[in-house]
Image (cartoon, rainbow, N blue to C red; front, side, top):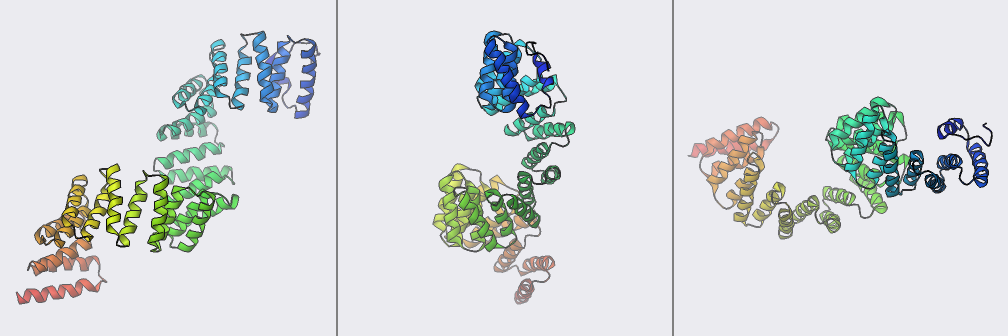
Length: 467
């Protein structure tokens, strides 16, 4: 150890303290405190003690000691930097940024200072400022994995998932054992819709950290998106083994179970998730879907109504409530839901289609046709639009127009059995059984085990003979 009267430079002091345990640091603080008491102007001792306070997590005292150093020497960039770090740990980000500004002004070219200031900007929501600082940090130190990692996270927050994946990939190249980088790159891939690539990253994160609950949960969600329901269930169960009160994992488990037709078990998981997060619109919507699958439409409507109350702009909940109301024959109420969706989203194809069917069920075929006309405008290649309009034309007695629309649906989707069946029926009503037979022949080819088209084909043959 140096003599107690020797001046210790900051860099030398830190090298000297490498490997020293907490008790050793406390003893050094006591020694430095005696020196400072004897000489309150001892900037080196104040700086060393401030650094030790920071290492021990006593950030308030670290701020105070570095502040005294700055009073003694306003040009000490290291003191500004150390105080900035302490302010940051205390979540005093604006104060930290002011100190980083001073440190960078006094000693330009410090990659760590730019990196740390960027992190503070990110915490304050100034994502553009954060990216700019991370850019400089990477320019100054191209091999700093942490800077790429943090810039990647910031790009993710900005919704630029391609750049997020690129930066996180570079962080992984520099530090392959960084489990968090694998996890967040997986999240970026998931946001890009690349589920299988996301799963590979979650796999890597879990190989590095077996009990990484977030990665386990995220992998389950990705598997749900791929409709790998049984595999997703395994991940959600594993996440719940780590944390039985993980509301998100319970919701995921409920969705997976419902998709596997295990509705009672699904309901149990979703109910438990809602006990933990009563206002989760995702879970309420999932339970509503589960109720609908069980044909418990009143209960489904109750859940969708809660979702809409919490988030009036949730169009999926409005659509789902509307379709459940239709199942109960409450078509006027369903139309009001579809009206609300179309008011918020005038190009919502699903709402026009569903509202068209609701109008048709009420016998208001002209309104049904108007909705289908709009649907055709929005999606001229969608066979469902022509099928729906054909149905409305048929119901109002415009048989030839109906035949033409069912024909358009079949042209767009030659395997559309429903449109072929409807067209065959109309051909017979129009006295054209030979054309009906052609449709029945195709239906028989598409569904060889179905007896209905065989029976109807025979009737069409008999009608042709009578003609």
